[in-house]
Image 1 (cartoon, rainbow, N blue to C red):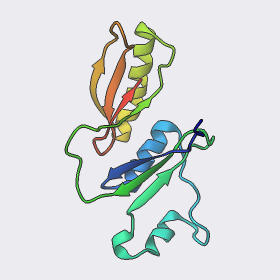
Image 2 (cartoon, helix red, strand yellow; image 1 turned 135 degrees about the vertical axis):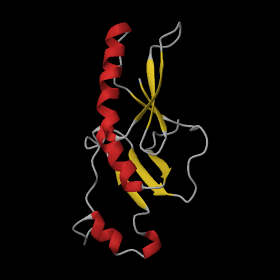
Image 3 (tube, rainbow, N blue to C red; image 1 turned 45 degrees about the vertical axis):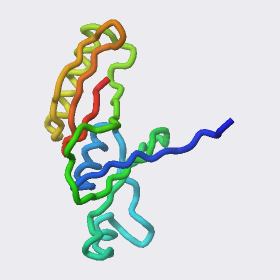
Image 4 (spheres, helix red, strand yellow; image 1 turned 90 degrees about the horizontal axis):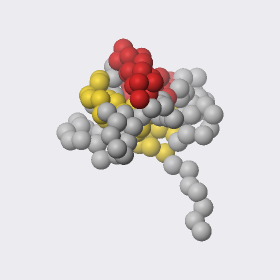
Amino acid sequence: MASVKNIQVTFDCAAPERVARFWCEVLGYVVPPPPEGFTTWEDFSRALPPDEQGSAFACVDPSGGGPRLFFQRVPEGKTVKNRLHLDVRVGTGLVGAERLAVLEAECARLLPLGAVRVRLLLADDSNESCLVMQDVEGNEFCLD
């Protein structure tokens, strides 16, 4: 039997720190301490060659339970639908109007952070309602 592996979720993006800080707010994640010898991540970035400054950023679950999120700058922009997305589980166990109210409340919290509401998918015979959103660079995620 294979052992359970730790995973990291990596985002390709244009502005790694901006996207990382958005996801910190969404998930309650934190920015880890900078490498030894540096007071801040900004100090660390300035020590890199100019073309590498600001090229990556990360955030972590403070409880240690969730995966590390890593954000790396890439030259190309997002052009198509994500092949993988995150489901932010805010309505687990809720159904009907109570679930919709929780999804809408979380959507309202995220909009001022730069999220975009895409569409509400109402419950059907197989799935409960979810709300499709986009982060600050257009990466899709669901409030579920």
